[in-house]
Image (tube, helix red, strand yellow):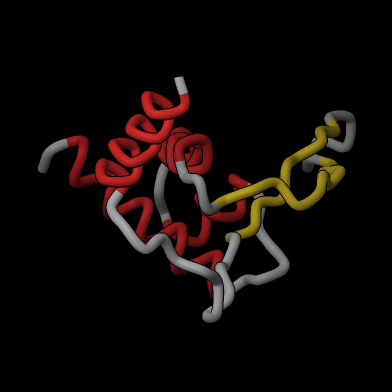
Length: 104
């Protein structure tokens, strides 16, 4: 299995998980639930345009001495009635360039 396939599978899994947890999850929590390495979850979180940091959570570890702030990630869900582009980006860019040239 290629790295791209793994990334796509992980992305789908993370998006599905965050859909089921609208209050959000930290990377260690997602890694534990999905049984995927935290580094793989971090890759998905960093690259996905639909995942954002909602808040920070203080986490005390079992040794009692170590504490950390962890980002709680949520999935951005577009409303069903959100406007959608009417033309493909390449046609849009051509139209914008034509307007710029005409304005000179």
